[in-house]
Length: 266
Image 1 (cartoon, one colour):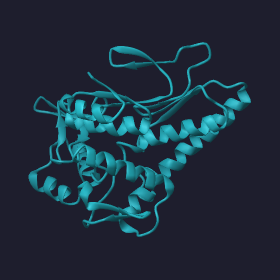
Image 2: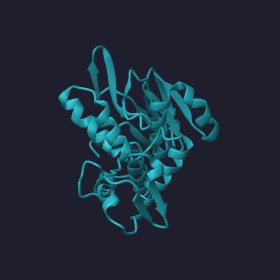
Image 3: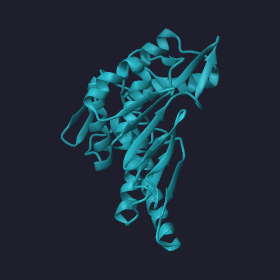
């Protein structure tokens, strides 16, 4: 999914630890092969060109994504593939999109143009492309943690880029120490996601443009505030952190009223 994954865990033996690491990373790689928009042969990349039942994993991601898209009125949207691909190209050229480029990408985006009927997905606009980068990494972290739990590893932390799935506390400790901006928090059995432009951005004429695109306007976010979300799962935290990058601090209260989350802006 264009990033790296790391795992920390406590096991009863080195052998158990190695088996657990191998199984959890294998699960992450399985999900990468299904959900990465960087891989042209992934199920996600091909979903708009085929009519077949979705895998359980992609079905879970897309149904959850569509729920968050409706809740945020499109601030979170997995159909922004044309927009993110455009922006990746323009960052290399060090320029902003012109209006015609944005309009073309927007015409091929929009969560209302994606329909889930039964176990199948239907892309209702020609040239649509999905990008699950704002939710799939959190899902992968949750799934890797679930693998570890099934193997008897309860104390573990899985990080897929800025998305953390946190298990039970390390032995003898009250929780895992997690830095959220200028705070050190002690957490267990939660998901954490941080979204922002710290590592991926483009500066033009004194304006810092994020790699995150506003699905409603098609434009990269200018001078956006990094945000961290703590939620019950990493997938939920991932999607809501992405949405709040777009909505800003004013969008936090409505989402906090609907979800049991903590929100921190830098």
